[in-house]
Length: 193
Image 1 (spheres, rainbow, N blue to C red):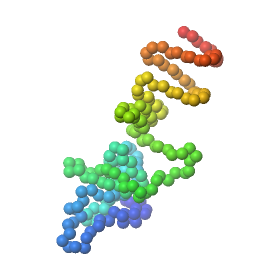
Image 2: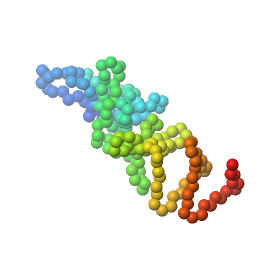
Image 3: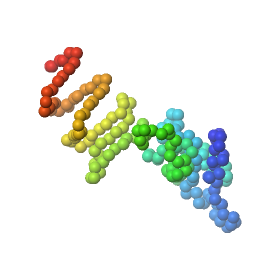
Image 4: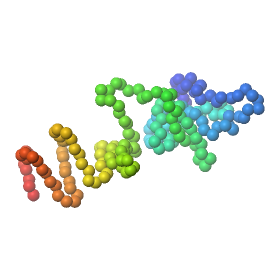
C-alpha cells in the first residue's frame, strides 16, 4: 500500500521508453533503478527504508530495503537502487541530490545541526589521516574521545565545567593541579585519603 500522493510522485519513476520498436526493453537497460522513499526508518530494523519503485513491466513494488552504510534516505527522496546478482533484494546505494530538498526544520538560532544515527560517529582526522577527535552517541550518553596522546584542552579566558556529578580519574600516574593564585576547595565534606 502506498501513501497518499505517492502515485503522483511515482510519475518521476516511469521508465523512459523509446518509440523505436527496435529499441531494447527497459529490463535490458536496468543495471540500476530509481525509487522513491516512502518512509525513512523501519520500526525495528535499523538501516532499512521503505522504497517504492516501478518495474520494467510498469507495475510498482515497494519494500523495506537495506541501505549502504552512510546512505540515509529521507521521506520523499528519490534513491538509486541496485540489485547485485548474488542477492535477493534491491539495495539503496545512493540518494539523488536536490529532489526532496533540505530537511524541513524550524529555524534555529544555534546554526546548522549534524544529526547522527545510533551507529554513527563524527570523527575528525589530522593531515596524516589519523583520528584526532570522535563524538558519538552511546546508551550511557554522548561520548567525546581524544585519540592522540598527549591531548590538551586550551581556552582563552575562564573555563567552567558544570554537571550533577564530576569524576576525574587518572588510570596511570598522578593528578596535578597548578594555579597562579589561590586554590579553593569548597564542599559539604572534604575527604583526603
